[in-house]
Every structure is written in structure tokens, then in C-alpha cells.
Image: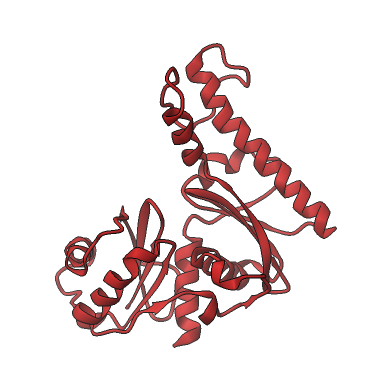
Length: 257
């Protein structure tokens, strides 16, 4: 079995894979804490694995651990976790060990989640595609001829919502869902419209500009925590794959082992 981790700024996703598949057997989620110790991590993940697969899933069943993390502060704890409890040297995704081509001015500044996304997309959806990851940030990653050539980074919708609330005194927290009308009749729906239709317009506008700049259109893959929030409301067709990053973690591990 292979353990894969997609460590985001807010949420960490963990998946258990068979050695012969990139489709997770199980997926678990828990909060990301930059100050976590290896002991804390083990105390979090072992009960999850045991509850899903029974006590028979002992440490010796895990033969590989692969990690994508945008939070550098937690990597030492995960390295210690892998070595101390599973006797494994973890594979930590970076531009330096990327399994795909990277045509980027500063590869060391490229997020490992975007590298993992690209690895999975090239494997599953073809050599030319656009990946949109709607998480803490909204990232656009362009793949041409199986090479990551660049993209766009914008604020995530929840990040924008939190900024709006923290910097204003009369606004209220709202769910990120489609409001009944584009033009709100109350403050609650006005904010919902801005967060929902505003991001729809941003996504559609940037995809259009990317297609125009590349002078062609290609598949769009939507992933991240809010992929399902917006997918059915966009004017362009897209593939929804909420587990793209985890699949990419597994693809990267397989190519290196």
C-alpha cells in the first residue's frame, strides 16, 4: 500500500493506494497545523486508517509514502513520521524531482501541488490541458505538449471572503453558494453574488484570455475544494476531478519507484 498526502494551507488530504492503481482506496481529511509533531500526526492518521481498513493494516503494509506540501513548515514532521513509524524514506514532490517537464523561469518557486496536478492531468487527460485548482488560492496551470509552461495565481474565494469580513465592520459571513438573483436585494445576497458570480466571471474571463493567448482551446480540468461549487455554472466544458492532486502524488511516486 502507498500513503499519499496533499498538504494544503488549510486542509490535508491523505489517501491510501494499492501499488497497481492511482485511484485511492480511501481518502481522509484533517486540518493542517504547521506546528504538528510526528507524534501528533501519527495519532491523527493511524485511527483513520484503522477505522477504514481495520487493525490488520499495520505499519509494515505501507511500502511507500509520497507527499505534496505547500506548507514547508510541516515537512520535517512528515519525514520523521515516515522514518520513525513506517521505516520509509518519503518521496517529497518538488521541481527538482519532477516527473514532468517544467518550462518555468523559477521552478523552485512552483508549488508542489501544481506539479502533482500536472503529473496527474498528463496521465489522465492528455498532453495539452488547463488545470484550475480552486482552493486557498485559485491557480491556473497550463500544460502544453506534456510540459508545464506557466499559469495564473489569483486569490481563492474563501480567502477573499475572509479578507472582506476582516476589513469591514458591517458585512456578514455567508455561504459560498449561488444566490437567487445576480443583483442582491439585501446585504447577505449582495455578498453571495459577489463571491459566486464574481468568481464565475473571473474563471470564464481568464480561460478565454488563456485560449486567446495560446490560439487554441483544450480540455479544462477543475479541481480543489470549490470545484463542484462552480463547475455546473461555467460557460465552458470542464472535467471535474476533486482528487487530482492526490492522484498526481501517486503518479509521481510510481515514476520514481
